[in-house]
Image (tube, helix red, strand yellow):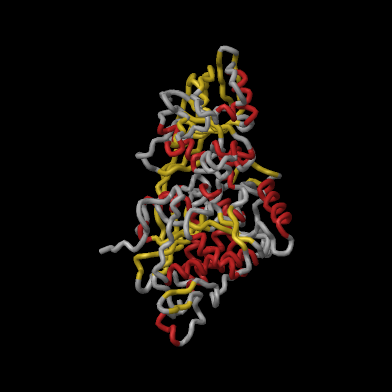
Length: 549
């Protein structure tokens, strides 16, 4: 690694993106090292090959992936280590049918077509026998919104049937939760967690494509076969977690004999809504093969020169979902865009940092984390067991999928409005002649679906952004067509593949330069981004330097 530092301010700043002026760095993209598109192309092409078998944690592709990534960091002269993440691998085989019985007769659902069920309990067999089904609205307990879908209900031995997303999605009223912008209460992870806290035997989420943000085939692919969960005996988990299709839910509601005063989705929005006994019981089982083992986060660190205990954190996840049901004869889910591309972008930024003549004042940490696809478990484990203190983390920049369609007019910030990281990114976007906008499909809750979320929960201001919603030459319609095509045909499917030169990476470089400039500014300054008062992640007081002995 070549070295240069702030003391050379009297003789020029050719190697730096921030210019010292009266002792304070200036936020700018001027004279940045290059984020190398050729290098990104090589990394994506490598990680998306079949030899990595879809990069499933615990799978045969994990050691190959980790070895390759370690080699990249070491070739840059950046020290790297593996962080053990203790997990349980659960290979579950659910019963081929679910039987429900009630006064009006019985219903048989078919696995894959009507429902998908799993468990996070490390038990060889999960047996559910005649558990009563209760419609619990959105399955939310949110005191700050005056909302409790479990009020007055003992859920012991019962299965909660809940709607996907949160009430704001249906009303689009900004005074109802956050309107059309999903809160964490709308995420499936929250609904599983809350049902367990309520002592429920299980929970079934009613799938609806618009409210979920993805189709039923994504549910079927993602909730089949082997799943992972953190090996943490202190976390309460319900025996059964699952999804049911909208058509199956309608069948269930009809068979219940309950006559709601208005459609079920609307009834659950009423202030006086109370949980509803569906007059049906459910019986099913899951047979599990268990393996307790360790997956790994890969943590690389450039040591800061004068404020080394404080650090800027870049994150991306190296994993995908391995192998799965064959599509056109292909069973390997390569995960090229998701997330070989984000991993490549982070490596390219690390490479640019390594080309500085000297490290900045603060340390810079690159975390390639595991098990994002299984539930953000790698970043959750790091947030709870950090190698470097979380209260010394200045801010985090997450990369989960790149802009793969070319130069953009926009920088779209997912979760815009949470912290002053937005303002810093906007200043840099202006230098690139780009405008900043919030996410275009806030109802899908993307802010809660990638690794920065666990850092945000731990108090670290986060930026999760990309261009590509407004193509510089072909505009918004073209960009939307490309996004829709990916979501419909490649997302979590074997078709998410890559060959060298397949994508124009100019947009990924455009974003990468911005992420590099922002990270370098934070690493060279005393600045601490702050949460806005309206953010759900804002803790008590302002963030700043915490002195450590």
